Amino acid sequence: MNHTSIYGLTLDQLTAWLAERGHRKGRAHQVWEYLYRKRVTSFSEMADVHETCRALLEEHFVFETMTEHVKQESKDGTVKFLFKLYDGNLIETVLMRHKFGLSVCVTTQVGCNIGCSFCASGLIAKSRDLSAGEIVEQIMRVQLHLDAAGESERVSHIVVMGIGEPFDNFVNMSDFIRVVKDHKGLAIGARHITVSTSGLAGKIKEFADSDLGVNLAVSLHAPNNELRTRIMKINKAIPIEKLMDAIDYYLETTRRRMTIEYILLKDVNDGLEQALELAELMRSRSKLVNVNLIPYNPVDEHSQYKRSEQDSIRGFYDVLKKQGISVSVRLEHGTDIDAACGQLRSKQMRAANE
Image (cartoon, rainbow, N blue to C red; front, side, top):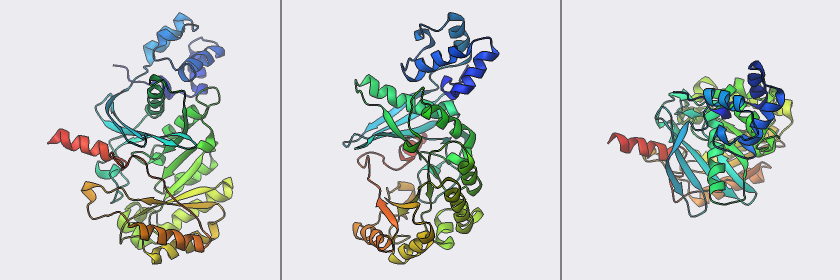
């Protein structure tokens, strides 16, 4: 059975694919408009596209490679989707409502091999990368959910922070970004797209040299090697010094602001000593870096970690602020549902095996 998503091609790739099969350049633009502006869900709805082209597309591509398995809706308007892929694997996608618009958090891999000791996403090892089409389809499924509800709003922001390490699926992640930010399609602005990495130094440099032009966030979560290695095994291979070198390369190459993500774990990394260490680490980079403090969403399987007290969060924030570091505390979404990344997926898989 064909599982190749029509959403997996950039406009240039679609143009070349059709041209190789004897279709003029304008045909790709017609198809593209139907996909992302008119948001049809079948090739038969592409009324203005020649029937031979429609038949060719239908022979080689599909619209749906996943089905909605579970949907959770929070009182704050957050919607968490658990999608079942064609091969039976499960992934999560989250719609979040902000004052500035609608943001979607997408998944890039089935499982994760980074192995952060506090994270629900890493409970199940990576089995495969998602294709570019499967990543784009997550955005389209959310947008179609909004359309079906009669809402005039559209997805305006994207965070690539779901299950998996995006830079470990660099090519497909890059094609995904080129599709969603294309001005002839969804036209989601590059400044409205953020990619988060656990710290693959070589890929950070490649990202800096790319033409993607979107935002970067790096998950640090500890200000020194001893502590970071304890909670993030990736630090054994890529210690903080190597990671900071890649971050400096990114800042010097792009001259763009970036985010340092820091999950606060009670009595682990949330002390004033760690705050001062983090401030010192960020000092020379402070003009282009914002530290985003993230309250921890507890995970049953990682019961050794607890959520930091509000006083600890405030104290950590105050230390960074007084040291001249740009800092914010992430606004929480969906706290009354399975909020932690990968939590809904792991619960569903655990239930299926019981």
